[in-house]
Length: 503
Image (cartoon, rainbow, N blue to C red; front, side, top):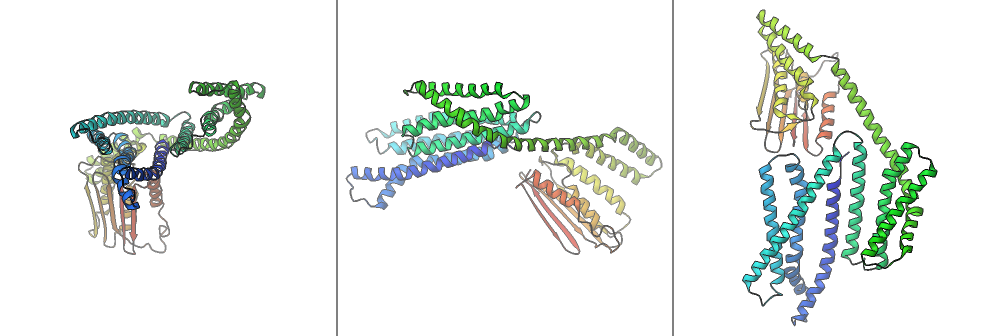
């Protein structure tokens, strides 16, 4: 379960921008016709009106907003998740930030200059240039600082909520519901505001002083009062007072906000809010709570099942004392050296390195690519010891990862190599395995190309479907959704795998 705050924010900004663009287009087209009429051009056709609109309204006003929207997408889809959260390319992040601020400055200054150039004909060009730069500097700084602080608080909150432990699923679900409802509420508000529907006093009063406290009360009831009553088995006679007190506070607060805002209303206004919250919103919130309780319980049950499975796995791993295994391998290694069994000693050493990797590095979510390659190297070396008896077996392993700083999930590549040795090696027939691994600044490339030797009818491995490959496919889908490409081709004589991962 992930926090959807950023996604909700992007949807809100996109829909609000669409609403504004629609209203701007139709409203400013009428202004263009009026401006041409004021200049004595009464017979202006649609083409002239459209040209005037593009030059004097669309480019200086809506054009900068489009660029700002694209910058907004770049910040939320690339700069924050890729550069800042992964703590990579700090210098590049700083350069991006400076570039964004300078671009905002130029956009605001150019828009101010273009918009006022035709309306302030008496001013000198120099003073208009200076005012444009001053306007652009002040507005770009304000925008940059305001949104920068907001993004910092947002990411800090997301990190705190996503922290493992406690009731993490509940926190994430609550956050997603709050941001979803909040941005939906703001989207509807901007729709009303942009198309000037809030001029209706009745609609405005309902939207701000009845709907908003109803939403707040729903969250209080669903995520605090009702769970508290269920947890402590509070009798209904005592619990009913809580159901009356919370709406009373909200009614008084929003009544005071209405009066302070310039509205004229007596105590009956607060009573109307309270009556609506108690007799309409509370029953609805109870129905929502019952539905959400079942969903939350299923999430918690799933988390318990996963936790039990993880605990069982840790228990099984603890049954084998790694120190005992390493000491035993070291003893066998020393004995092999004393007996001049160099191949045996080499195999024992590499086996020990592989077991250390599986017991230590395999516990982490991500490891440096160099450690994964080291494990592959030891595995291939062990296999070469087994196949040295045949001169018709060609095994090559090339890696071009110098300077590669990527990290990947452990034990992700080895199933492909194991499959190659399982089906690609025959001590009686000519066989080959070619393994290549390389990387660039964004992607990791992995290729395995091997011969295939069909199993005989009596071979128990003939009908095996390859559980290891299916398992790694599932892991790739879960760990790298939309961040990997896996291509597998096979014939009766050869098998080819190409994997690209964007860590």
